[in-house]
Image 1 (cartoon, rainbow, N blue to C red):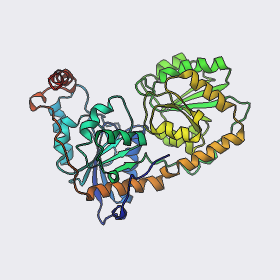
Image 2: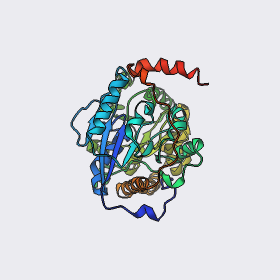
Image 3: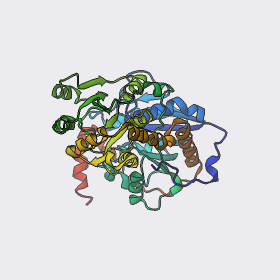
Image 4: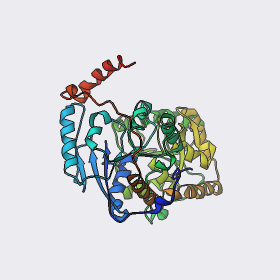
Length: 407
């Protein structure tokens, strides 16, 4: 497990004597996903760390009132000019920032010029398809970077090898289990079905929850007794419920409160990931804090690095559900002493990500970047002014057409 400050010098310890004014720009904020949880953690705890943090959410409409948070509610039919006006107004309503943290790689050519000349930090949460289309320009427009895995740090350095190592922070969202989490845990009875769980967005895109029916068939063919629970919601939930109708074996909890999430997770033996791509999933780290062992595909991400550090058999070839079923069968056959040893090791692995350790590290890093000279920048091609009357959806074919002439 390699969550660390790439390099840190004596200046890093200087917390300063005034609140650091930070504006986070993100696509999402509400909900229980990893990015959302990271932003909500900033909102709740940054003041005690000497930061005055504000949040501008581009692609969500407000579901409830959040302090210091503005929701712009963009969608594919929003005109680019309208989007720019709304972002300009949101920025004007805030105190001038010392630092902008861009929690999304999307859309910079539409709005980067509105941020002025403050220091900028890019936060790379996962290795999603298409990331390599963004990074060659994004790495030349920032003064620092936060990544959630070694693989993402290497990808960043691939596009800008001279990026200073002291301006890269490797970290994941802080995990903050309730004190009572240990009382939620129930040791597995060796003869009982293995308690498997999934926690996250119930969608095909990225999470590939459509793979679970085939996993069920593979486990049944091996004769592995199990129960499978789903925590979360999404556009594929209804279809999955129809494909897995036995409520004695398949439980759908839906979207629950944080307290309920901890209580439910603590009743699982293992958390299953069938994703096409991930960073270092917050749900996995939280599960490990509650005694849940991860089963993760080999994606070259932080997730498989963490799972593999527990035991190589907890990582399986991506998309190979037969191999995943065999890994689950192996885990089900482990005795209680072995499982308890895995759980104890998991607690040691996640120690750097506990709130008391992780929060201060991020705050220290942001203050460090704000105090450093700006890095060399390369001009980013902005969306032409004449196209701003288009909607985002209408702009897509224009972008594809113009790329033909830039090859």
